[in-house]
Length: 382
Image (cartoon, rainbow, N blue to C red; front, side):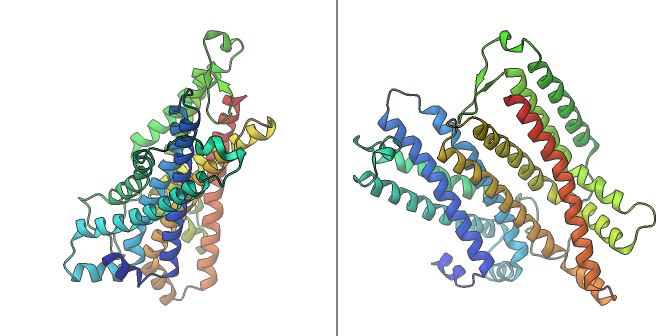
């Protein structure tokens, strides 16, 4: 009943977040049920690779759930204040937000399970018989166990989105850290250098004769161990460097004697780089990997599958939704600064121009990091 009372105060953004969570959970549940159906229909094959192929979409749903849960207190401070006035502490409020997201995941999983059971009832055609495991009995515990993973992962990620040691964000103005530790920058640079060197070593002439290549899932062919490990290290290094590069770009914008639009864009980007770095790095990494996979499938017709493509699109969608959630959190926290600038006489066009310049700078950094990640991935698959 508590969640129904909370739902009465939903705004369009809250409904959109709820529907996106349920839809993403339904897609992941469908992928898990497809792996189960394949295992039932063809018991002689190894079902573990199919289940492992479902882990990236499951992790993407958890990432989106964490970003959405962290953005709720900043976007709805009046709800948090009301729960606090009713006697709910920080831990209980976190559990309420996590339960709300887990409930949306449960409903999405139930929709996928209902569709799976209906299609198994001699409705699906021969093309889907292997994916549904038609003609074989379905153990009741198997789909329940698999589908429990989706709300558990989403709810756990949402509950852990804000550390329990930190004060619960309520939308009030706080002082945020803007710098990056030197160890992080050194680690990212070292991983990038080591990854590029290792991938070049794995792609050298005659590298295929050093050992059995790695068979990649999803019809992506095979590659050498060194090339795959090198790409993973380089991608991780670029992801770690995304936040520092955003902060550096903000400082470059404010160099010299900048115009007000450059000064506002540069200072705000430097201040927001720490919070935007992680979701933007994940978006760039997943987009590069997915676009490389689609290019590989397009160059080699018949190697890709529809559900694999759907899983790839789900990963990008969850990463993009997490960026939007974090952007909304940053925008709400910037409201006092915007109001102060308007009271001081700043023109709304100046603030809009600074926002556009900031977006263009962020896009340039993402094109750099994402482009390098995609180029290294294409080299590893060639």
